[in-house]
Amino acid sequence: MVLENGAAQVAAWFGDVEVRRYPDTLVVTDENALLDYIFSLSTVFNLPGQRKADLVQFVKKRFATQGGVFTITKDAGIIFGTRI
Image 1 (spheres, helix red, strand yellow):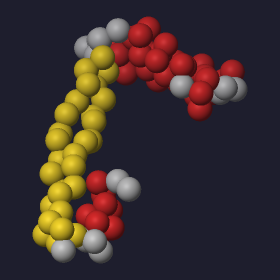
Image 2: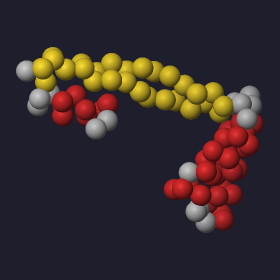
Image 3: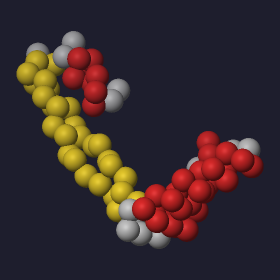
Image 4: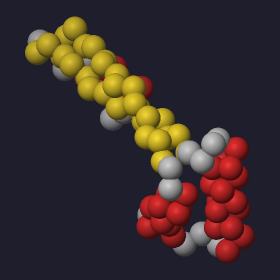
């Protein structure tokens, strides 16, 4: 269940369903720390050589063009419902 469709799923069991979002961002200032984190993920760790190189270049370019920061938008929230 995700925030985008969770309200519809919860509405089958609860009344007065409401989604409250918590907009947030993560500002990363260390290029190497971000790359280390990305490559620690098992789904990314096994990228073929060229794709891994492309990802590194993307991150480096993003840091260079955004003033030394990489901003990651986070979308979190909670779904409230009243018991029927």
